[in-house]
Image (tube, rainbow, N blue to C red; front, side):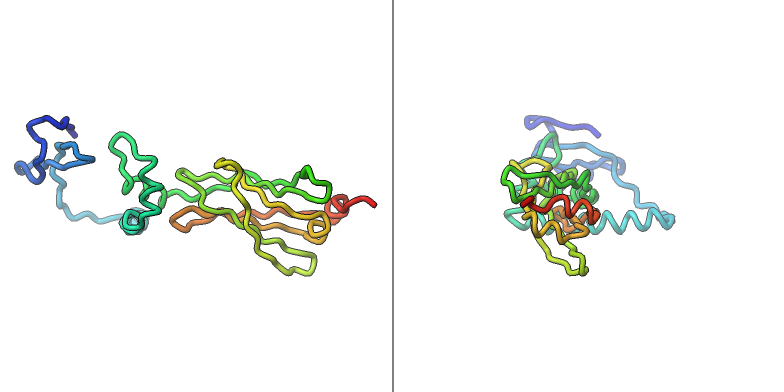
Length: 197
């Protein structure tokens, strides 16, 4: 693939040049490529699945660049011929990952912090927690991002924490994919976190 600068002979042109070459415009710069071959290919089952995933990614990218708030997020990271559309496709193809979940004492005496480290190739949009008590009742909570980092924090009181036996964490990205992880709390651990009288 040959690339031309703004003042090159190819500037402003696009389309088929001959039976082998085509001129495309990428980020305002001309690009000379081989013409795509229209051969009929028998795709394997895995290739067919991957093509469907990529088709869904292309649909998401088309949707994302029509939404001003999403377009602004993707535009912030454009570089070297990688535009917002390409970034949206890449974001769709990679799910977020929850690296770790832990509970630590907060500075306030009667509070603990549930700390979640969640990563994504582009950006984690939100982190939500399901707090599951000893009667298996669930309450949904939302963590706050710590200084635009990969760390998300949820504050919980000692008394409430002592009644919880598990925390299920969900990390979401902008295309809507999510990762989940469960953090189990033993009864001894819960009792040890009660405020001392």
